[in-house]
Length: 90
Image 1 (cartoon, helix red, strand yellow):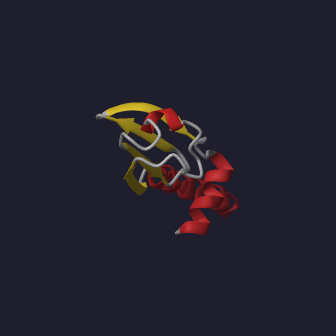
Image 2: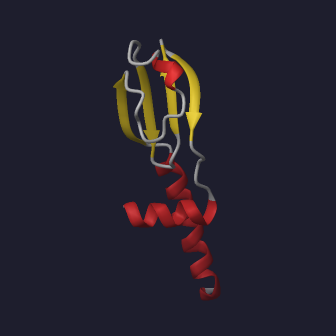
């Protein structure tokens, strides 16, 4: 049965990583148009309106305005990429 130890351990880590991925990495309320990921300056009306950006451990950044989701930046890590990112950051 020890032939499957590595496979079982990888799957265990992947399940942990999937739970960790949806944890909040940062929360930022701002009116900047110069965020490194921001390609939507219209959301802040060029510095006149606030938005809330929630960055998740998986790499996604979800933007909301007035309590409503308006845009998602990035692409969620999955599979081996997610597992490698999880191992590096925990």
